[in-house]
Amino acid sequence: MPGFVLLVRARGDDDPAMRYGLTVSKKVGKAVVRNRMKRRFRELVREVLPVAGMAGADHVLIGRQAGIERDFGQLRDELVSALGKIARR
Image (cartoon, rainbow, N blue to C red; front, top):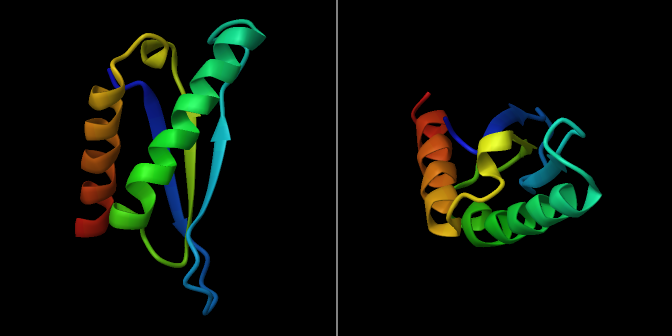
């Protein structure tokens, strides 16, 4: 099971900017855990989105329980894979 759910939606305007949003629910853990996950997700987005993201789209990462202690490299690979699947559509 991946450490997050990725939602991507094209905005339909002429702006090529890639926007992102992050969310981690209270089901995942207390504030310290949720904030740690969000920091890791922000770093993932900074690394991967400019290279593999869709221009003119909104990207939303939803944190899941499986992502709390997951290796950062594994999270990066999952995000690249998920963005690749979306790009092929």
